[in-house]
Length: 277
Image 1 (spheres, helix red, strand yellow):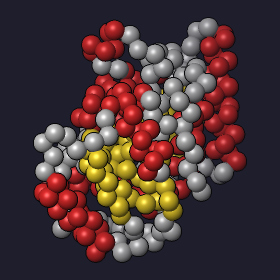
Image 2 (cartoon, rainbow, N blue to C red):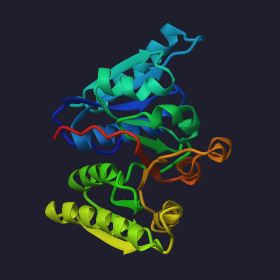
Image 3 (cartoon, rainbow, N blue to C red):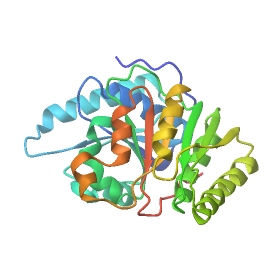
Image 4 (cartoon, rainbow, N blue to C red):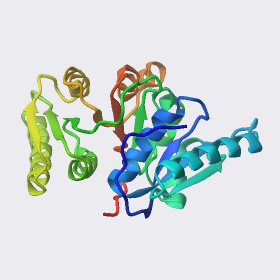
């Protein structure tokens, strides 16, 4: 029996929080996050399993239905759907978003490399959770490192959503670039974010980091880790080098290092879909 400590009565809407299931015991960690987010954003929870050549339909359906039944018993107000299919490669997130109303996908940190192609084409963010984490979902402290890219404005939408619907504080760390033009771009991003946070009365602190735009995400991770933040929000890579493909993307390295902190990665190469409020 899965045990969750609290759940707010929610009004279910069509959009869905997708939990990428592996049908292992640690799936309960992902489901915890899925339930919490479905409650926060008043969305439907969808348990998703991607089939492969060795797919055992009866066993898979039984496990998924057991999860759904347990959730129904614990949270009768929560709508839980099941989705099984062979969605592949770079079209996975697009298919989930366009055909199944997904607004966010929750997955294990160890799945990052497998899901990286999909993320690079995704109109929805991916929330990565370490499968060995022992902490409950906690969005009371959210860290967001900001660099010079204008695409930070898309990630800001999610900062705003979490700030509006989860009680807590937003910590923003701005890059400290040497070139005046780069500093101006960072300042513009920080100013736009501050205006939104002030407008909605969201508690926040904005700091200037010591790293430039290339290193601010690592500095943001270190700061978030020291303050025991519950989530780090990252804007994904805009371009990829051969070294990235060999050694891993910068955001992948941070996701791997984050043990007790969830990491939300927003794709900068596509405009992110909006959450219906």
